[in-house]
Length: 294
Image (cartoon, rainbow, N blue to C red; front, side, top):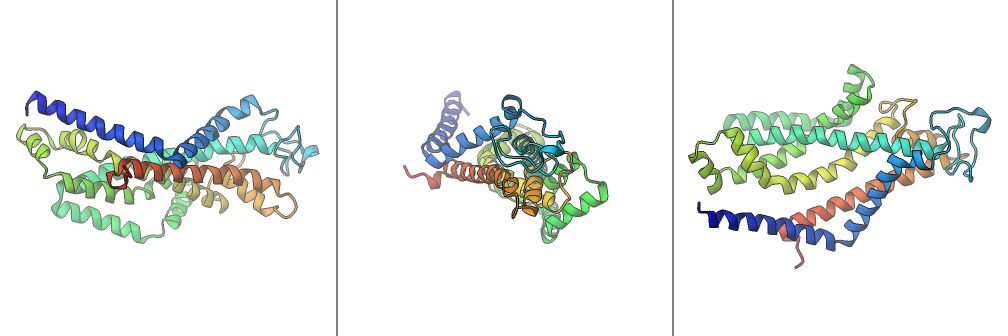
């Protein structure tokens, strides 16, 4: 391959990503959702430090079940804890679980799918049968079993969720690798004596980043929703820590009398899920040339 051909390929690759970025910037809902999601992240990270007049873990029974006011913006709970601060602190936990569990599923799914797709043959058949078996298991029950067996631990929580969310990622990566492994640039890499590891991680995976990014952006809200379900069942984040799922669980139990306990955490949680889904849709439209409206 000549220097000119290499330069042309690099230019084409840069052009594809530039076009994708332009399509994403033209997607109004994706842009608005990105701004909202960024604001939520900044509020959760720095809100308790800048606006929180109270400690979210501080009990004050004299002020329990206070309605929203200038002193307690979102009111207080049964122990007199400030709901505003607890909502933001719970957001940190929910977002951390969402991103960390997605990272775990990303690593497992990409490596597993790459090996299955590139090696092929009996190895591929065996690996994908394992995936099929795991798919047949109710994944929520599987996570619950892991939590019961190894204890209710925050670190274990996102590992357990990530360990059941990688299956679809593995299938996506496998399909992409199988479509690319016999192309000319891979054959050229083999002719140059490159190792299989270098071919997979240096040449094939960079060409499947689009689907991986799209699915990862849609996995984060799915993971956060699963964490909320587990917290609602009492198997997620444990007090005194808080998460949006735990706060929603506590608020749902008292919604008839103290609706603010549910309303504010639910608003933050719903806004985050909607934003992430719109961002994922925007990335899918931007990175899929077939969806371009140009």
